Amino acid sequence: MVFFFTFIYRFYGLSKISGPPTSWFILSFPKMATPKKKKMPVHEENQDVDNDSAMAVPSSAIPPPNISSIKNKMRRTHEFIKLKRQRRKEKKELQKKRKRETEALGDEAPPKKVPKTIENMRVVDETMVDPEDEEVLHDEAHDEMASYFSRDARPKVLITSSDRPRSTTTRFLKELGQCIPNSEIYYRRGLDIKKVIPQALAKEFTDIIVINEDRRKPNGLLLCHLPDGPTAHFKISNVKLHDEIKRAPKSTEHYPEVILNNFNTRLGHTVGRMFAALFPHDPQFSGRQAVTFHNQRDFIFFRHHRYLFKNNKRVGLNELGPRFTLKLRSLQKGTFDSKFGEYEWVHKRHEMDTSRRKFFL
Image (cartoon, rainbow, N blue to C red; front, top):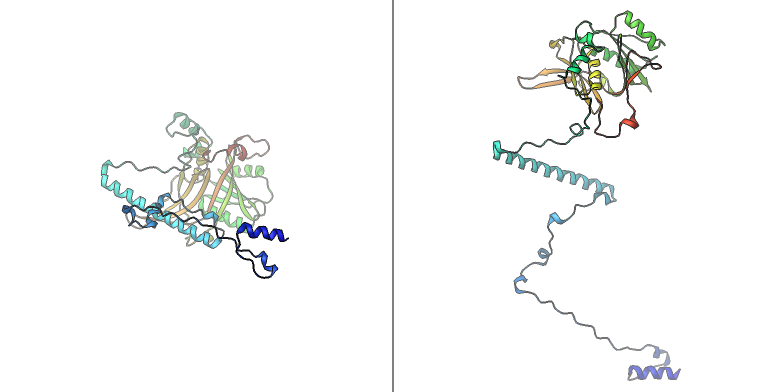
């Protein structure tokens, strides 16, 4: 033990170890020399430049913050609203800039860019109809609705529903009867559609409309043209009655104008002609009422309006109701026959809906 402390004493060159033996373990080692920091040379021309400005990064190089990484919901919502406001502001400034450039260039300004939408980028369909095509004109002159368009038959519509309809469906039937002139509402008493068709033919009806319901709400529409068909089945959604539309005036008994939009294919042309055959030929313009069937992405939007002339340039619209949306499910040749009928077109969702830009009407 004495040898060990003698070795330490000689190795470190300690001058003196004093005190009791318990204090011998506390040794004072010599301090190590720390290297001094070298001063970097400063150029005279950069002495007046601020360090913050020298290290500044242009704002365009900074990536936008990832809002989805913010875990606080209130802060994340606030940042998202702030980002939308900033984008809206930049969009308006860009529009003003383009407008100023267009005004400055005058006639030499480049043509306005057409925005890309699903409608104008739709997949090309071989069945698109050319109104002046001789084959199309020949088919229209000899199809099932030819007697209506040649004014040989006056439309008379039978409107009915499924057995034991609920109050919402009953109100929908009444409002639909107010939209379609020369229509009569009959309540089914457990009769099949096949038995209703001969009775309708005996009373000289030209069309039958059947409203089906599910969970006390209308969910389907069957349109059958008499006497030779065709028969179309639609799904109904987004039904709004007259009382559910704000400030909706009551409709009158005037014959409305019929507007058909975007029925461009052969299938769409047939469906559009079926809708047109429900209304009389000569609308009464004094009533200022219009019924619209607007096809957009194979959804048919039904609207019933009254237009108002505010002055020589401005026209206002009052919606009368009802309002609903149709989606074609099938088109059958001839009158309704679910068992032995021949279907001209059936919507098969998993096979047909392969592209968002492919439409059938």
